[in-house]
Image (cartoon, rainbow, N blue to C red; front, side, top):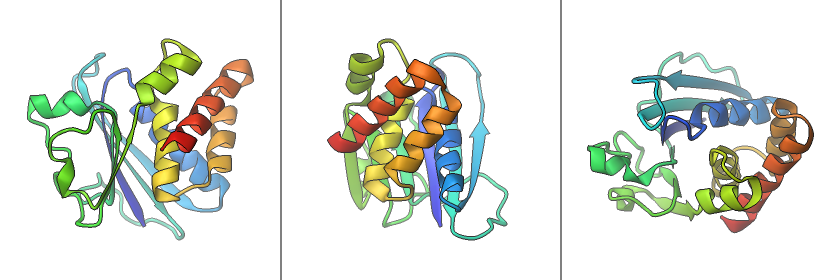
Length: 175
């Protein structure tokens, strides 16, 4: 089972990213959960989101305490004393929006992507969530890129969906 913990700031789209990830897994016939956790509920405040993907029904109904994959949308969270490696399994993968934060060395593998640059280049002022998902798919293989692109197009119809799918695919290639 894949267990994910997303570290972000309000407005970066991590909650939507978790939902898109689970939609992609379900399209593949997998089981999944997206579990948001809101705190201050304001733009820029730390946000923690959790997700699980498995090939069979998931009976656990809680936050993820021992992720085997961590997504860090905001590397500067370490400056607030947030330890993005807390509870991570020894074989955990870190997918991080550049630069790599303190604490990254305890991960078995680190995939760094400039999700902000990719997003701003292809989408303008938009959250980096789809770019982070592209990097996640490449780093873990937990879902296929095609499923992720389909989930994005289902959630965001029309031209905006196509542009978001392009940003996701670009991040996949860059990771």
